[in-house]
Amino acid sequence: MTDPSSTDAVSAAMEAEFRLLDPTVRSSAEQLAELLHPDFLEIGTSGRLWDRDSVIAALTARGAPTPRTITTSRMSGVQLAPDVVHLTFDTESGAQHAHRSSLWRLTGSTWLLYFHQGTRFGDEGPIATHDNHGLADG
Image 1: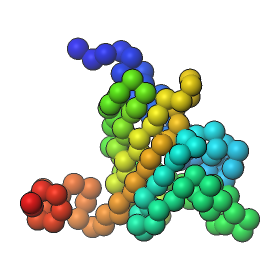
Image 2: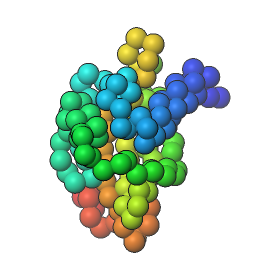
Image 3: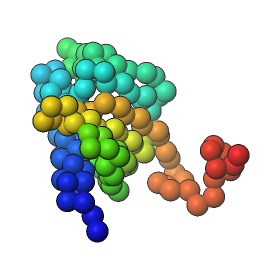
């Protein structure tokens, strides 16, 4: 049987993730700061490392392009500890597709994004059936 607190934690983290993906939130330094943990780190789809301040600055820079709508699919989550939830999902923004992984930490009474990684994928689709590259091939 599923622990109800686990379901609540995953739902709360998903709600925060969807809020973070909202173009209005992504263009507001104040709203971004409310969702990003002080120790936030990201490995972007380009491979670049980002910290909290650099992500906020890049997303809210004067003259930055208007944030695109981001479509999500296949979002799922699991509570790893009482204060940690791991979410995985795919995004599409324009012609770019990415697999995403987010770690959310309960800080006080608020879920904050602690770590995020995105990995682009293309025409091969969201899930490969046989992958001879990476962890699985030893």
